[in-house]
Length: 409
Image 1 (cartoon, rainbow, N blue to C red):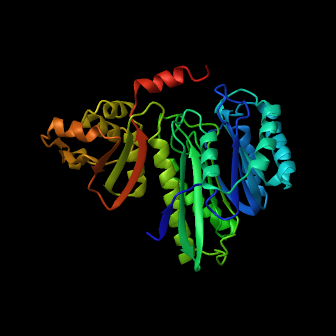
Image 2: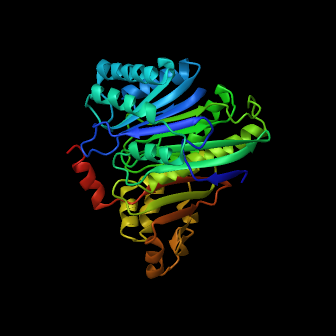
Image 3: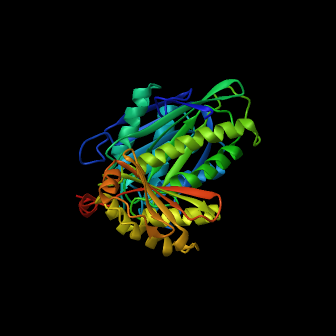
């Protein structure tokens, strides 16, 4: 491991500061807006929802990431998603950028915006604008400011999600820090999630995008909570170059070191989302090993982690391995069920449940103990090759239904 894990989040890299405020968008009166700002312009990269229905902020950010040279600020609100809001909703993105640009004395085209919450409602623009104006003078580069920003973007999340690392590149210390939110309406091909990752690395825009796109495949795209792909999914990565390392312009050792550190950030944030699924009691990790190809491993692991019956069994601490084999069978991937070995693993131990497709005669008591931990892993070995993949999800509980039956009230 070439990187070092540190306390922090989006304010950890040089030149980045954050602020948050309660703008009155949420009914509970808790903080509901966050602002992240770089003191110098950044190159930006992004990945976005694959849902055909794209929220206004997604369209706004895609234009900036794909067509503009730099970005310098991110404004995020929670409570209202600004999705399915037509030209009026897109206009509010432009208004938000205009207010932010004025408050920070930067270009409107360098302001990225994000929203999360209820679909179909229009943003209360006056409150949003007042929120931006309140946050601008409060910007700080402290760890606490980053943490409060991470709290402000939460919706049904029960905990803030942030992480930071340092990595040596070109004899300079490069820092990467990120925060995200996500708890429900989460499914592969990006989730109901917003992720904001900041770095002081000097790296070309092209390679920044390449690194993010590659990392997303094995991290955020391997998370599923409930099978619903959101309208708002966005991960933004900003690099301001203030670490002073020689600019990374080709895929050399420096790029690899940066990629590994970024991938850790994204993996950590993805796991935090899975472990905080709406109503969940456990993070459910699925590893498929011994696969013929990466594609096969991905298909099988996603099929298991998204199976409602398997998720319900994990909630009940029930080693119902037939559900896992069943989910593998309808995944569309070809394998020999008579060769599959399956294990359950957690902090309480590791247990082989089936060998060559047949029960090992394991102890139900031991299995239940293993499945009663807050993080549970299922490992399926299909014995066809050396490829593997890991997917993350959570158990399916009564509470999930309660939360989503009552989401708007």
